[in-house]
Image (tube, rainbow, N blue to C red; front, side, top):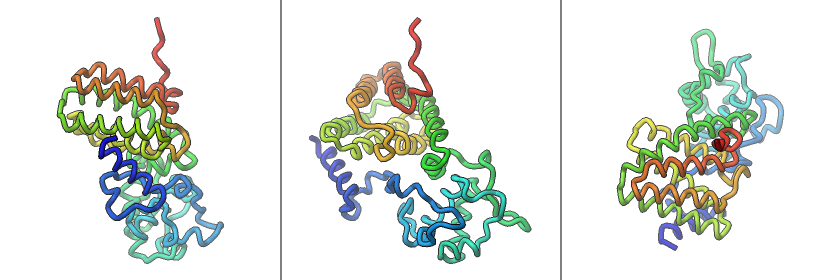
Length: 295
C-alpha cells in the first residue's frame, strides 16, 4: 500500500471514531455531518425545545460556530417546508427560539438571502422565496434537499447532471497529460481498491469523491471546474455509504481504473466511454439514463 493510501485510510478511520488529531484531515475537505445529523429538524413551533438550541447541535456546523449552525437549521427548515412564505421571519423570534444574538440572526439571514432562499424588503420583512428563486447549485441547498422531503427529486436531478457533466470532463481531461495529476488519480484508484478489500466504505467514498473532483478540475474548462463542488455534493448525498444508497463494489472500481488508464493514454474517447459506463451502472443513474439499446 502506498504512503498516501495508508494516510488516507488512517485519517478516515480516525474521523469515523472521533479520534482525529488536529489538522489530520485538512487535506480531505469532506462533509462532516452524518445522515442522522441532517434529518429530524424540528418545526418552528412544537417539538422538544432543546432541539432548537443551536448551541447544542453539531449538525452541519462546518466549524462555523453558532452562525453556521443557525444557517444550517434555518436552511433545512425552509427547504423542508417547515418555514414557508405564509409569514415573515422575525429576527427577534428566531433569536429567542434558538437562543442566539440578533447579530447571529442577522448574519445568518444574509447568508440565506445570498443563497436565494429568503428576501428582505422594507415594510414587508424577511420572507421565504419560491423554489424557482433558490440557488439550486449551492452545495448547502443540495445537501438540505437531499436529506429532506425532496430527496428523491434531488438525487434524480443530481444523477442527470452528473451524466451531462462528467463524460465530457473525462474526454477533455485526457488532453491534459500532467504526470502529477495522473499519479494522483492512480493513487485514488489504489486507495479505493484497498478500502474495498478491507470493507472500508468511508475511505472508498472519500477517494471516489476526490477522483471525480480532480478529473473535472483538470479538464481545462473553467466553467466545468466551477461545477466540481456540485459533483462532490452529488457523490456525498447519492453515492456515499452514509446514505445507504450505494456500496463500494468491484464493478465501480474497475470502471474507475479504466478511466484512469484512458487518461494516461490520452484517449479521450475511451475515457468518456468508461465514464458513461460507470454512471450507467450506478444505481441512482440507472433509473434515469438506461443503457443504450442494441440495434
